[in-house]
Length: 242
Image (cartoon, rainbow, N blue to C red; front, side):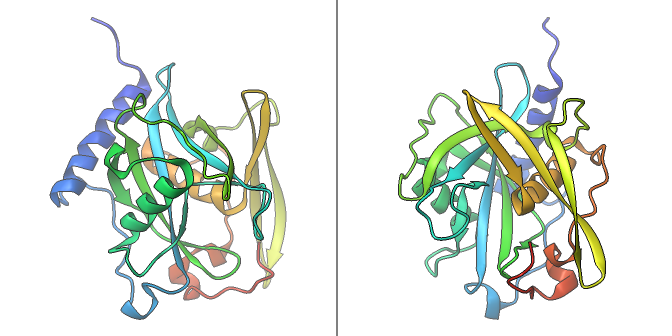
């Protein structure tokens, strides 16, 4: 009998959680974020999809995009599939799934939602809600970038956002905001001869997601910006924050 990889064990646990999420059972589900006030549900709010799947070597991987170089904001940066909430979206899950389909051609039917994680606040004061999901069929997913929004689609091992690499593929830059020092983390990754840098809020979300999925803290000092915490700052930040 073949021994299961650590990634397969994690995937099995997440699949169980996804079933509980689907059926509405909370006994084994991940912690849910606090309810969102009605006044801010449709304004200054976005959702991103953390879509995981089992890689060829038994590792848990996450789908990422490189934003189109023609976009007016964050052009050429690495991001999770996602975007602003639309009035037609019934909730944050609907936003994340709709945006993922629009950006990378990922059909909502191929995603098993595991949980909705605690929201972050980006440097422009927008609340960003991470939705954790599983790709139900890797073969059925044909990555199709919307060229108006996405230059590339790639994937990375999720566990890299917890490890302390020996080859300088992770680095951190110290910043200061209102007397508080924090760290911005940068993760370098090469995929099919293309080099990508995952940093700032996207890196912060993935560190948090990896900590939840693998049930352990990162091997390095995280020290994230306080203004990323929606409950701590009332979802208000300045445009100068990074």
